[in-house]
Length: 140
Image (cartoon, rainbow, N blue to C red; front, side, top):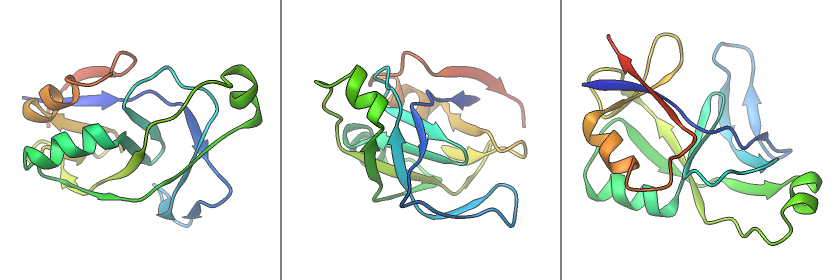
């Protein structure tokens, strides 16, 4: 079984993001995720990119899940975030580049540009903080 996964959105592109909007979805070649707020989930989104904590990255790599690669991401906080959450220490995040086919790979992108994960991926992700993400059945 496969699921759409809609992660928490805790921010957006920072100034160091390099993105081409000549196509849809936009093509991002360098990612800075700028936090505006954070409820604590360990997979986050800013369209069309996803980031995961180092702990999640380790888990999905260890399980040999398919359809993704990992890359570095620069993480920053907005002034508002620092004012509202001055004591919050962000964990290390990695860029989850989803490259698989929805309904076949453990991680894939559907034709409507939403993230699709397998049962195996969902179980791995749910071992971590994922309170604000929404899952919905995917029928390919």
